[in-house]
Image 1 (cartoon, rainbow, N blue to C red):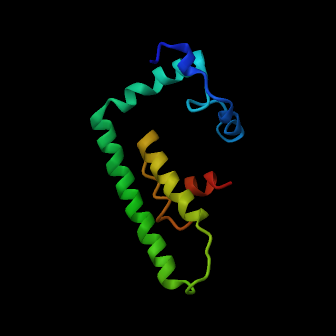
Image 2: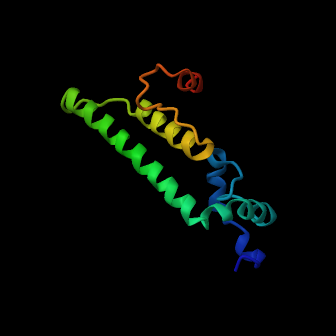
Length: 121
């Protein structure tokens, strides 16, 4: 299947994703797809690495859910609120810990962390 170049040509529909995703793994064709796939495949076959990532995802998701719960409990009933800061800080915590092994505590720093402040600019 992967060696069949006809299978690696994406349909025209994928061009609508390119403004957002550029030419990444999802939107790439043929040689570019093969190269990128070879680079990331080992990460998905290391079960210990994936297990460690799941622990990080779960821990950060629990913090995220707790923060949202607090916001909902203390906020005005039925009133909308901006979730962007919550999602951004959770994403930063996950990426920093999984990609760099660093705990930046973006979700709990309340703007007091210099790294978190710098990435928000």
